[in-house]
Image 1 (cartoon, rainbow, N blue to C red):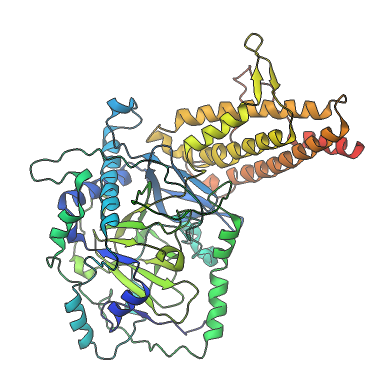
Image 2: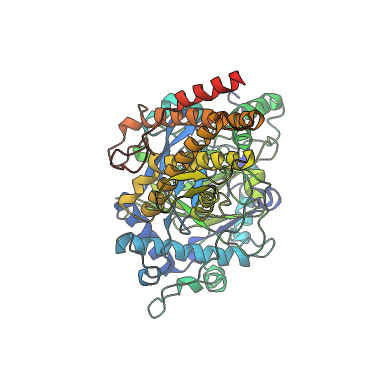
Length: 611
């Protein structure tokens, strides 16, 4: 693309509000002052608590068959038993803790962490109510419209902005098409814009199917005296703050310098060149959609309807000062990117995303020396996907600001996060597509498979109930799903959070027991295939089913072993290092000895050859 850039508009540019209204109407900004002060206080304290306890960790994700670290540190909170999958990585949600422990009978984390999770659930409750009550075309407190237009008039003919000042720009949002690399970012710069396969999420363009998995629970702790009840923090209460009482934006460049206008027609000459570059730069988008990531068994997408029920929030933390290198935004010249261009992935189609942004200067949430106005703020950039004609939009974010991406904005547009000068948290609330991503789901799949296994109550011996090829194929598919979508995902990174919250420990122990029974079923399946008394036609069909399942299992196990022992994985401290599990434990004499998959595959291939 060379020096040629596509134009973008910032608040100080003429036509900014019109561009927002016409091309980015799904974006809604809620200024910090329009939220209850008590809610701000609890949420910001919660984010700092999670950071202080070490709960925000970098993920080791898979990008183009290579493991890389995410640039941001993150954690997933949400409905109990929910997960979120992006870039071949499944995140296991720390539960909201929206109910008292006495009610649930679970004490899986300390009081401070429980209170922090509950505060973020209160924010989630607010977002669910607020987004649902928005009317069509309602911009809330986008800008003090009259003042913004007056300032646009003063700007003369400046139609677009393309920054040098935004070198100081901001960013560090939720999802993840970010260059996912920690200290190795500079070595793999081509991956900077490969965000989540979701996320957020993610982890990317609202990908697939789903159902509203859980009823949203309204149980909020009462505040003191004038404090707003978090579960009842209403749109009306917040809008009392919103009516003309918010200071308007300081519409200045993030670095405090003048910006150079970029004419909207200045790009006609290299259009084909730009289009080619865009195609190359976003090739991963296509790969992600084709790969079906985020769901082990893709099904037709469902469109979000009815009241909004955010079921998870992906928390992100990034300190630009700690980054060795931040890549420049390549198309518009918006500045340094913390998170590259992406759609949030693995969401219910057309479901909204709500983001809370909190900038701070240290782990205590306090400001460092010097005026905060001297600091470049964080920003979000938006563009119409695969469109080099519509100017981009760049929106500054003050600490405590929120924004919503509604309707089809997430699927038809892409967004990036531009880095400011201070550290930043974001809490990104979403309706994750969880038709195959909840504990309830995988437990039901285990029951389905194990219903074909009979255990003699006296001897403890096992036998298969049915030898129908379709039943056997289903059992082996479930076997692989349990191992590679759940157990190995958990032991690769999910178990890191057990030291903070033990909610997942017992369920995963049970899943591993179920997996061992499925290993036994595989051996019984093999014995049936090798049984000479059975009709050859039936044996051949069963052998082919078994060979396909075992070959896939063998390849995936090798991939996970390689990931667990990769050079990047070895750099992690012991408490965060991936574990090559599940495996047969030597401390469990009731289970049969482990078997060699390669040997079994050879046996089945030989059997098929002889038939």
